[in-house]
Amino acid sequence: MTAPTVPSQSVTVPDFETCGSPEEVAAGLRAHGYLPDEGLATVIFLALALRRPLLLEGEAGVGKTEVAKVLSRWTGGELIRLQCYEGIDASQALYEWDYTRQLLHLRTAEAAGTAAGKADELENELYSERFLVRRPVLAAISPGSADSPGSAGGAVPPVLLVDEIDRADDEFEAFLLEVLSDYSVTIPELGTFTAAVPPVVIITSNRTRDVHDALKRRCLYHWVEHPDLEREIEIIDLKTGECGAELTRQVALAVEAMRDMGLYKPPGVAESIDWAESLARLGVETLDEVSVRSTLGAVLKYREDQARVQSAVGDLLAMIAGS
Image (cartoon, rainbow, N blue to C red; front, side, top):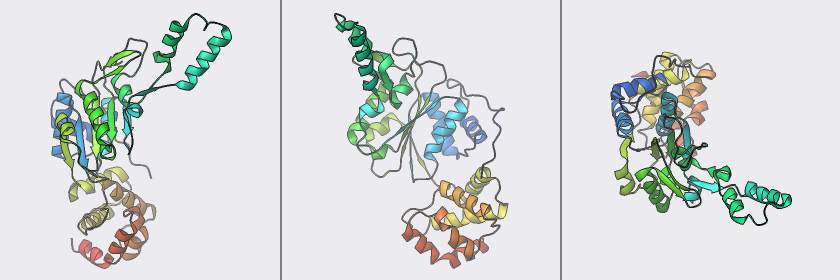
């Protein structure tokens, strides 16, 4: 099921120097399918206006990653994603050399007889931008061109998404903090690459561990809550398009109740949308015991959570009927 496309022609690409207000940010994101609350719209506005990284924390599924994706569509800046994981290090975020192509170049030079007596020249060729593989952080700082190191290309900054920073270790956080302090990277063989236009940086965390205070001080911060009932109804309606008003309301009410049941993994907005789409695809117009029991896999992803809700389906439906 495809969500309806929201026209964006009437929304101008923002000028980061003169981005007018949080309301302008909210309107821009809404035009591209994202409905921020006032607090989130305000902190995004400040991050753009002050050119500061934005750290978003919250439960999984509340829409943190989507902020970066929608900002990319709104601003026209390229989305560059760095997915963090346990064991990630600076080289996987910055750059590496294309050793296969370097070796091929070296063997070609040897076969052509041009390697002899030109060791310095050959070394310079091997460690040139031609063989440099830009990883996300360097790509955001210096997208790469024929210009000298430090060129950032066009005037529209890319959007760098550092996703799930809480999965990385302390050393990686320290590295990221250093890069974000001046948006520059030094490569010994090539020199220093400095962003002519700093990227828009969105960092997300599911708070499986605490992010260090030093990184938090460098960023603006916002805790992304689950939406209230009315906003969740609006989000489901916007994203699904084919659910009736009553089914949309009932799904939002049911998900809101599930979040108060002490589940291991309460459903997020993403699960609300998945559930509504699944029910609509099955032709369900209003929730009943059969439809709820048979589609819980779209909204709850742990067996224990499903068992708890299965045992309370009657109470859940009664609550919805009385609302």
